[in-house]
Image 1: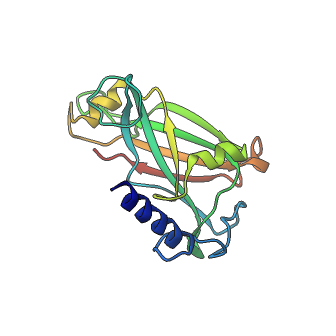
Image 2 (image 1 turned 120 degrees about the vertical axis):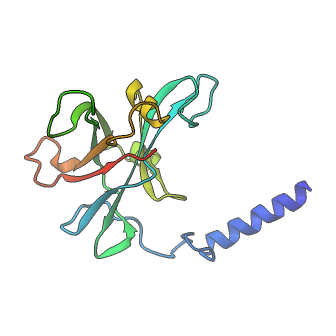
Image 3 (image 1 turned 180 degrees about the vertical axis):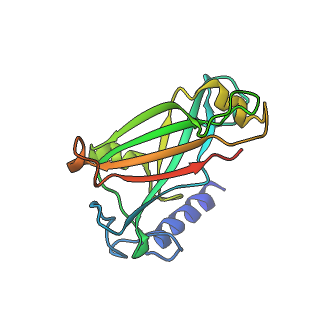
Length: 193
């Protein structure tokens, strides 16, 4: 049984290394991911963005009903609009803003209220590579700790079913950090339960 599993794993790795599976990038099968932002670079916040719990018993992930630290997991893609299958992986800083939905029973207001802001510094090549999911989603996976309790309750379906919370993500490339913001990319999305 063990020998069969090792043989399957070995053949899978060989096929993947040769680029035979869809989504596998074999040696020399295509250009490396671009690291610069150009005029055609776009950013998308994916629908898989979610609220999760980092449990106290080890291991990450899980539903929102367990005990542990609330984590907002934001999936973001940077790509070239002229070549959408080509990832862009520049060094830089992500800023994520979480907006709380309006309370239907509370005072009326025109916009959602900013609840929390996180900054994720990916100017280090090592940290940048660690945050990018090369094999499955081909996105940056930003795990943001200390998600507010109201967000966990909302994700569990507690409270009114009105408006959804939203996130706005900004990305500033390394060379523009501290600048005028002209090269900062912005994208937003509403969260889903």
